[in-house]
Length: 306
Image 1: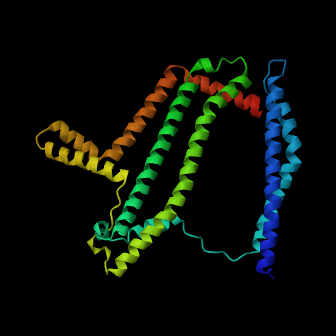
Image 2: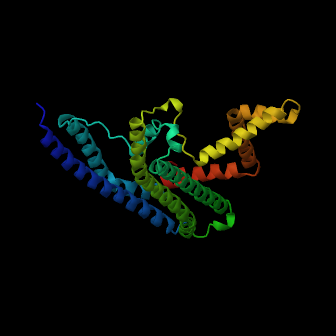
Image 3: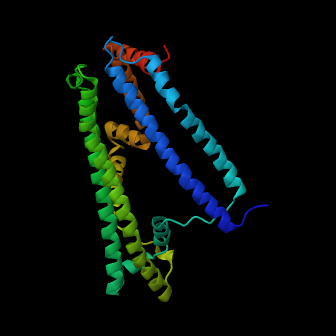
């Protein structure tokens, strides 16, 4: 006999709260033991940075907590089956709803005599352009951070092998700000995108209501809202048309046109060739051997497989 809806929700909430708190505490214990292993190994006077004994000793301290966590997880699966709750239909994201409703706006309303309708089109276009501009800036920040990180990690002078802790802290100071900035930028854009979608949705519904009132439909074409993607698409379409015209009398343009038609395959082949080149360069300059030695040292000294 299954419990009623209210009891099931209460049991699920209580268990979820308990399991969530215990999971956080277990994670904190694991991090504490990992730091203990790291600092105790680094301070070892006999030259061995990490040993299998201190790793096993630290992990054995956590075994009761880990076994209890697995037991709680199994109990959770059982409780979720016993105290079942009627599943609710997921609520559609407002951005998805906006995308669907935009396809129902007739193009003829873009040049309507009604000033308020034209203002609605203008507002939607401006929001679309602003969002694409923000995402472009976010991508630029991410790419700049990636370039700086690669340059920092590729510079051997940043890792003198004198103080491992200092080297790791310096790496965090140089890399994490870029990661945090990109993540914060992207999260901020997502929040603004949701708020903007709600505002746009009001105008889209207004346009759809006006089209129904005027007896219009989408037979004359869906409304085209101007975005940066459209501008880029028009730019490459123009290049494509020019290549088609010149390819009749120019072999080089014909070659470029064939590359454009098979651009996806060309991009894949180029990526594979670059990967092969980097692998060969790494083998030639000895980086592959260094990487293998580091992997062996990690497995034998840190993890304790040796």
